[in-house]
Image (cartoon, rainbow, N blue to C red):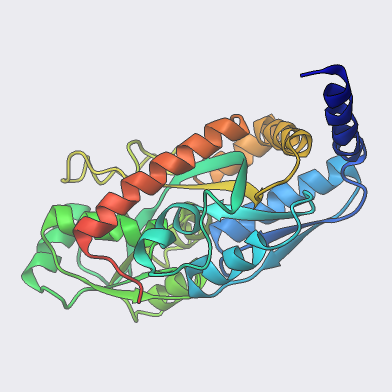
Amino acid sequence: MNAPRLLAALLLLLPVAAAAQTYPDRSIRLIVATAAGGASDILARQVGLKLGESWGHQVVVDPRPGANGNIAAAAAARLPADGYTLMMGTIGVMAVNPSIYRDAGYDPERDFEAVARLVRFSNILVVHPSHPARSAAEFIARAKASPGRVSYGSPGNGGSPHLAMVVFSRMAGARMEHVPYRGAAPALNDLIAGNLTAAFSDPLVTLPQIEAGRVRALAVSGPSRLAAAPQIPTVAEAGLPGYDVTGWLGIVAPRGVPAPIVAKLNAELNRIMQDPEMKARLASQGAEVVTGTPADFQAYIHGEILRWAEITREAGIRAE
């Protein structure tokens, strides 16, 4: 590149560098694509509070449930790519919805920048305390004996609780009826009320209900037991070897946010998540902190899209 063109390129970069130096100079909006009270909302508020304390500008958590997150994601993808609008990315919104909807209204890789992966977590298989099953094996046996008569709730099509039960039922050879809700809390509340047979539910919402005796835990969906509840076996231990469905959450932004701002956000979010107090609090809620670079998270999202496209196609899951 000759000197004049190099100078012109450097001059173009100056405003970007200046913006990164002063970022943030006003409040940040963090969109949550699921209903208030679920894992995504809880983590958004915890992280938003810490980010606001660090930078001296409020992080406003903006829940926008509906259409399994498509409404929020489609809207967020079209907002200014300046770092002042972020979204809590979930497995459903960022990896599954484009495979199960004819037109989700957005493309997770084309329309979003990966900023920082935050946590992964197992969902917990729970039943109402009146249910006779005391283990996952007993639950499977009863579900197989009554095909189609076992109902399970989830926060919606394509989220990790729904996928956990889809994989569970296919591996167990048990046909069950799916009842989607507009969030994790409404689904769990209906189970507590006795209107559902079972659910896989995220630990941030479910552990307090287990401790209160409102639901009975049978197994966890991940590859290892939860540090917060080591007495609950994994599904693999309980009778389905090789079973592993893990949810995750991370921060994304509209595509086109300047790289220095993405890097600044990533560094601060990693610092917040690696804080011993934050890690201990999340561990007590059943979540494991997972950090890395934006490129790490982007590659992970790509891999998840491919994985769940295959699983949802084989299972015949469609949201229309």
